[in-house]
Length: 273
Ligand SMILES: [Zn+2]
Image (cartoon, rainbow, N blue to C red; front, side, top):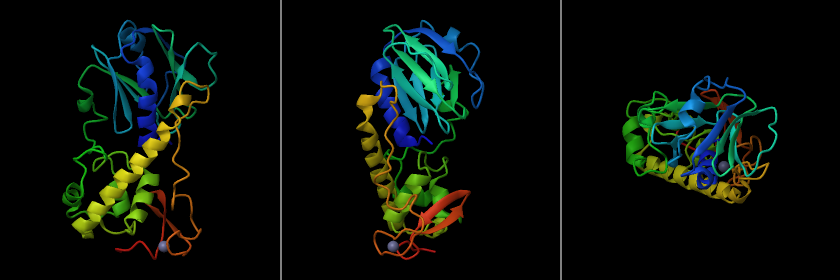
């Protein structure tokens, strides 16, 4: 599933090709994504120019003078730049063609993604308005988390994966950050000290930044047929390593379902329960 770093990588990958470019045509081959693609999308976009490409949580916001194209990659979506037309494959649902003949192609085998249009400030869109701060912003701090956690007995792992608290901390990043901060994932959020919250936010930021940086290394391939953003797999210390020895103490890593998500952790190194 594309996580925040992949979406950030996608943003930096596509922006130079489509920013300040006029839209020539829009082809929707399959409008049924998570929500139907607006039937008047072509009418809204053709002749319009993308002024900027921004990211909020895992939403890409392509701003024009009349409104904003909102794109979410869902479970399996991806965007790529075609420097010249290529025949669409089965899951290539949408093409947006620009005046420089470049095509932005949306591919999504499972069709849980979304392509929407809004004329209001996208921050006030129903999908975006309740979202917590960006994890790499100054607003996301130990103090902020500690404030939110008052009276919250939720497991810390579910707490930091809640989009209303902070966006973009998916299962991989929550798992890795809790290990780095030596916090047991089931610790009730309201029992952690400010110091622990400071550590946790610090590691969430470090791990996300590292992952974004790695995605950045594959940018040069963004306009290739297989131009998929880089995934942060080589640096994972706990995620996907259930029953393998902890890299710190050698104890086999434990696994448990927390809030419907599989969680791997070290019962020796991660404390707080
Ligand atoms: Zn350990």
